[in-house]
Length: 182
Image (cartoon, rainbow, N blue to C red; front, side):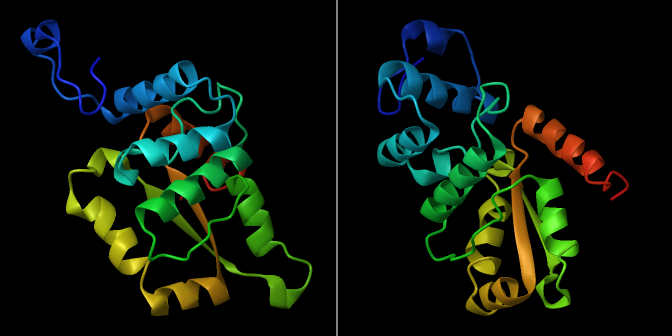
């Protein structure tokens, strides 16, 4: 497979292969970072990716992050870092735990003044070619009034549903948090 900036081989061009799906692209990025560069940690990997590629091409979540042994917290840290590289005008920080922890943090605080409403942001890079995929974070989640409102009154949690595995993990988390009927 050709790296960005390289020409495809004749064999790849003759195969009639279409563009890579988001999952395939992410797997290529993953393989390059971990194999070619000897990168071992999730933090090193995201920094390497952001230096090498346009932030819009860097996956918010690693494909198969769960089966690779990355924790939800590591994955959410990555999400925040890549999100801010993609949308630098947004100062929104997303909750770093899983959905169940976000629900607990938002709704089950012991002090009444600490309870918050929960906002869930789902991102899908399969819509990458659509302006809608990026216009919402660029225009709405980067708006000063919206950022102030969210920061003062809401707990924000995000999940990347680009890969089918991550979508399935979201559904599992929803069921575990008692939100399967939403």
